[in-house]
Amino acid sequence: MESRASTTPMSIENRDHACPQCGETSAVTTSPYLHTFRYGSGESAVDLAIELPLRRCCACEFEFLDDEAERLEHEAICKHLGVLSPTEIERIRRRHGMTRAIFAQVTGLGEATLNRWENGIKIQTLANDRYLRLLALPLNMQMLKRFGSSAQTSSYSANLNVGKFPALSESDLVRHRQEQTSFALRLAA
Ligand SMILES: [Zn+2]
Image (cartoon, rainbow, N blue to C red; front, side, top):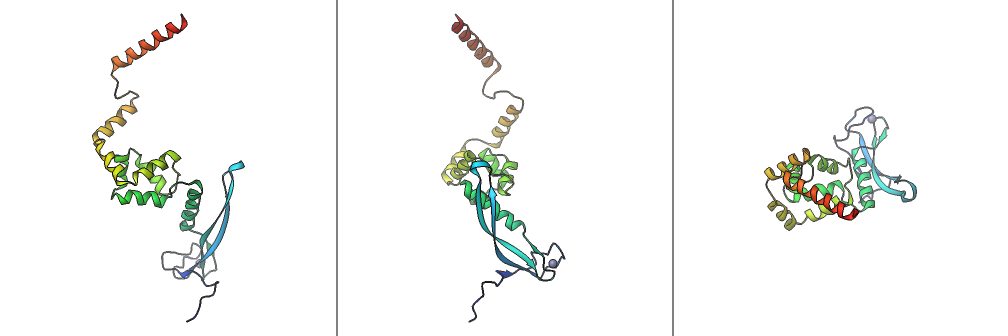
């Protein structure tokens, strides 16, 4: 059996990778490329190193990186920050067999926000990251499902939009203000 030399490309790619230069679809090969980049600024800046798939077109010799490299770079940053990667977030949602819309409805997370996390456009805050990790547990998801129907959720959002506290009536608010006033007077005396 013939052993592969280290310079042998990782694979001869199929039609998925068209050369952006000449458009050739059957001549793109992939080989590993060590990429180092700086993440962050000031004292928290770090140098991260990752292996990326470098594409090379055998027809016109053009070399390029594509969205797979972008995805890997984003995952390296998530790993460095200690938060879930887009793939891991999507895996959690799919484990529950939920669409983004359903997942958003049950968890109270915004569907657009979820979309940004899963596509690597934005990285979730540490608090949301911890929340997502808890959501991976079926028991926690079952508990959330009990919290309320979509009707309640949308009425909560609607109330927030007009700037009222959904749980307090107008008279509650007046009473609250009066209590604050008398408390302030007592302090001054
Ligand atoms: Zn080409």
